Structure formats: structure tokens, C-alpha cells
Image (cartoon, one colour):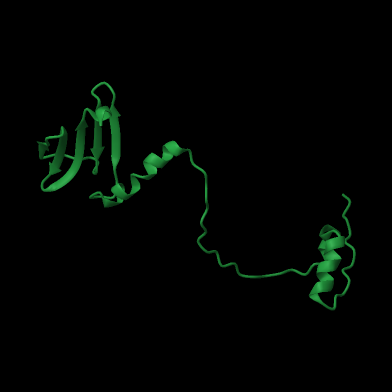
Length: 125
């Protein structure tokens, strides 16, 4: 196996000389001459901007509602045959009572806590 020898690194009197040198020379030619460096890295929270299809925006708009829900979790399912949307805040939930509102929404309770909604005629809303 052939081992490449690095060129000796020249001495620099200033940072400007070092920058100028590496603007015209390949760092790879001087790798063995580089001193080992030890340093701490302080990782901070970063913000990443990503592009999403507009259809996902509808779901992201639900986040404030999920945060405001009783358990800060929500399970949603849709039954196309029945045109019914089921929204649950607790799994498993065991409703002890329910009420049908004037706008065809069934509110399900476990004790005094709302554990879900059943939204009838969902596609017509």
C-alpha cells in the first residue's frame, strides 16, 4: 500500500497570508502537517424550512385544536359508507353518555370529560 506524504506546511505571519495560501493551494496536499484540534461544539436548536404540498396545510391547521384537546392527542377516522367522521381524544375510550346536537354531532362523554365526537353527514359540511 502506498502512503502519500504531505508537503510541509509553510509558516505564516498573519491570517491573511494563510487565507491567501489556501486560496491557491489544495488543503489535501498538507493534511499530515495539520495539527490535531480539539474543541467543544455547542449544538443549538435550529429552524429548518421545508416545502410542503398545500394539502398538508389543512392538517397542520389542526394542530392548535389538537393542543387544545383534553389529552392533547387526537385520532380521526372517516367512514365513507356512513359519511361519518369519528374524532377521539382518548384511546381506548368508554363513553358513559352522549348527546346529539342540533347540527348532527354526537358528543361522547366519559364521566364529565368529552372523549370524542361523531360527526354525521361529514362530507356535506
